[in-house]
Length: 210
Image (cartoon, rainbow, N blue to C red; front, side, top):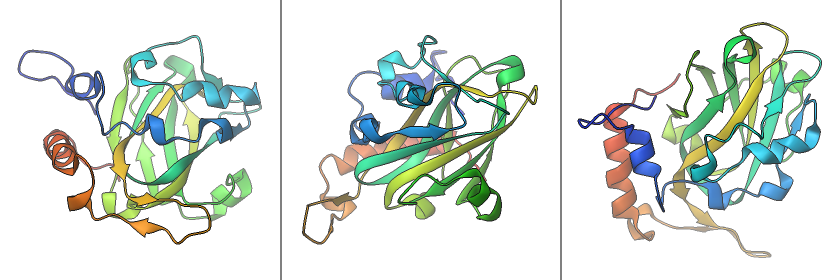
């Protein structure tokens, strides 16, 4: 979760304010983001927002016939995902659990989600009004082309609502049409030292979700 720095400011907001290089918003293939069991299917793209719009509540997704919804997020390049950033609905529409599936070429459906072991199960925080950061086991998300996020078990049991989805991490590979993916050692990647220091600082304040 986000925490306060010694001056009482939100440390997550401080790290990501401005042009923070660890925010993966620019690496998301926003045109191909979509969801399952949404009241308005097109709304899935609207919750992929730049950091300065994270508190916007005019755009959100809400589940349809029950409290389960799946959001499929593809990336334009393979990335290493270090944490998921979420702003959830409050009260009855707060989802309490998230299953994360990595690198499915198409969106995983509900039948698959119930029979497929997720890469990660996360218990979501209730009652939060701001964005919360959920750190991941980096080894399991070291080379990610897409993520399927399965939100479920809302507080009220009828609907789930999500206002914002974001990610922190870095670029691990370059994707070139007709060529083999080129691995980029972290030590040689641009601004790797800066990213490492930022993530080490964040890691010291976070506990890994399991």
